[in-house]
Amino acid sequence: MTDQELRERAKAVIPGGMYGHQAAPGPAHPQFMRSGRGARVWDVDGNEYVDLMCSYGPVVLGHQHPAVEAAAAAQAKLGDCQNCPGPVMVDLAELLVRTVQHADWAMFAKNGTDATTMCCTIARAQTGRSKILVATGAYHGAAPWCTPRPAGVTPQDRANLGYYTFNDLASVREAAAEAGDELAAILVSPFKHDAGYDQELVEPAFARGLRALCDATGAALILDDVRAGFRLHLGSSWEPVGVDPDLSAWSKAIANGHPLAAVLGGDTFRQGAQQVFVTGSFWFSAVPMAAAIATIAALREERAIEAMHHMGTQLRDGILSQARSWDLAVNYTGPPVMPYLTFAGDQDHELAGVFAAQALRGGAYLHPRHNWFVSGALTGDDLALVLAATDQAFAAVRKHQ
Ligand SMILES: Cc1ncc(COP(=O)(O)O)c(C=O)c1O
Image 1 (cartoon, rainbow, N blue to C red):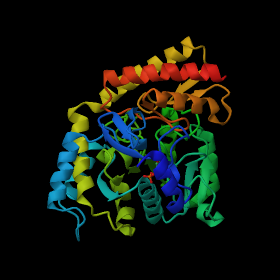
Image 2: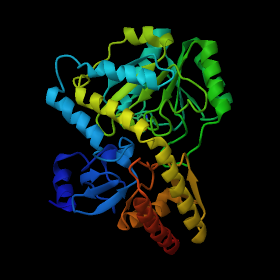
Image 3: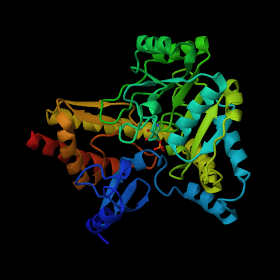
Image 4: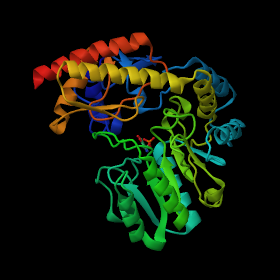
């Protein structure tokens, strides 16, 4: 069955043919993937690519990582979805508490949206207050309170949000003053990674300012580490910044592609965490928890975060030097392991689309409107193939201009 044939069938039985970020990033991209191994993926038509999207983050050690898959298979033999969790849940909670500095406890769910929503609920339960501050344009999931699309969302769904600008402490203070006695939490991403925009690293003084504001008001500082967690640091992404949140939301990379999310918190918010009723049909599932334990062990043993940083830096240097040689003005922003490329004055991401489509033809799978992800499986050969593809992609942009 070809990609085209599957698209035709999907059109009839899947609204819009596909939805959410499951939809192919552009017309040149395949809609259906067959398999993946290491840093390589294959589409249903048999084309092979070096994967620079890593399933939008979950794949951090590479596809089908042997130790992770062995741990998952061993747990699957024992049981996965049972009446109660397996012992593996306690093992994983203990491991996360040992691994992440601000964590004294852990709770588990399936998706990042579960985790960010739970953090807000816990903060409200504990403080007895209603308002959550979020950065304008930040993505925290697809529930009505946070989805970027307005369809089906009521004003009431957003009534308890206040807005600030990332890295602008004065705007947070203003929003906090407006929330007044109702300020329950400030939700923040470890860096600004709004899809389609240049990324912005956090200013340490901003992070410290949020911590101080939460300390002064009793509101919870919530770090949304869903996208960046365990790719930048083997701990929370703000540990290198020196700021600990009260609560943090995790998913994506924690189980190298197995479906799992986590909320981690400090003792100060344990009471709120005990009060809320949160659960889900598949939240028992032991296989992803076993996979998470093996993922964290492999991240440490393989020094994968250093490896990703090294390859990501080489990727950045290679791409920036190519852009210079093609005399193209680009912005390459964000941490080297989660970069994003834009072209100066590129209205509606037209040039980014040309670039991504040509890179794809050359065997590099990347995205025109979303940050990319480097995995620990990326080899020197993979990088060479990517850079050959991006050189041709810059040539295509030059020609298109
Ligand atoms: C920063 C951030 N928060 C929350 C989410 C929501 O996670 P999920 O799609 O697993 O619900 C995402 C997903 O991309 C994300 O990047």
